[in-house]
Image (cartoon, rainbow, N blue to C red):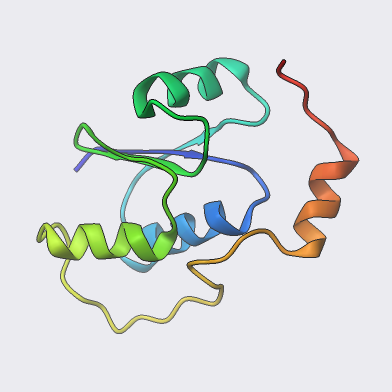
Length: 111
C-alpha cells in the first residue's frame, strides 16, 4: 500500500493520522505542508481543497480527514484488520492550546 499523508508538523488532526499509521504499523510518506509551499500546493491540487490533513492511499485522496476517519476507511476497504492496539492521543480532535502556541511562534504566510 502506498500512503502519502499531507500533514502539519504540530496539529491535533495530523497527529491523529500519524497515530493510526503507527497503530497499524503502516509505512507512509509524511509530507510537511507548513514548511514547504510546494507540498501545500500539491495537496490543494490533488485534493481540490485547502484543508488538512489529506491522506492519499493507493491513489485515492481522502481530504480534510481525521485519524479516526482514516482508520474507518482502511477497515471498510479491507486494507487493515481491526486492531485492539491503543493509541495515546485523540484521533479526532483539533490542535491543543500548546500546539497553537508552537505554530504562532513561527507564523507561515503563503499568500
